[in-house]
Image 1: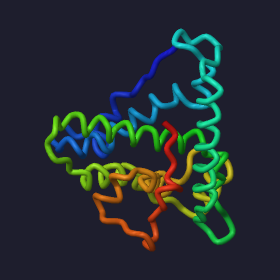
Image 2: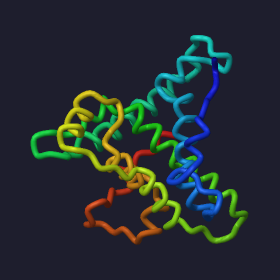
Image 3: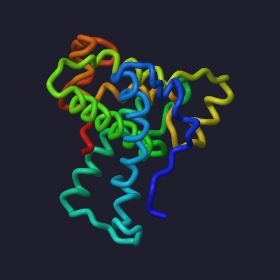
Length: 190
């Protein structure tokens, strides 16, 4: 089946709240939906056409750009060290990291379009995204996740905001601050 399915149970806080403002919902459920849609256009989704048939539809130029951006993103995640003796494996988590970045970017674009020229509340948008990744794990569980799971630990998934220029303006993030990435190091997959 060539489709996306979301369980109805996800349409509740922290992902969706009908009583919340638009930036809250775009930052949480919007980024989650964008994440899942983006898998249709990643290294695995590129192998299937619109009818679900095995057929790579990327051009060489698209593939080369994707590989370069993917390597840069893997390098970012390789630098995350939840423990002094253990780092995230950026290649192991790459597909999900790309989807997180693409989903967040698409949700931000959709949020901006929904405003029809009104000023955005980017701060709330990004706070909502980060809050959707709240988690607490025992050390043993986190170590096992890092060793075996294709998903990075949630705190690093939230850190993908570092690649979006509007996040810097929303929080006035400056060079020299811990989460700052030089513009040339910000990954843009799409």
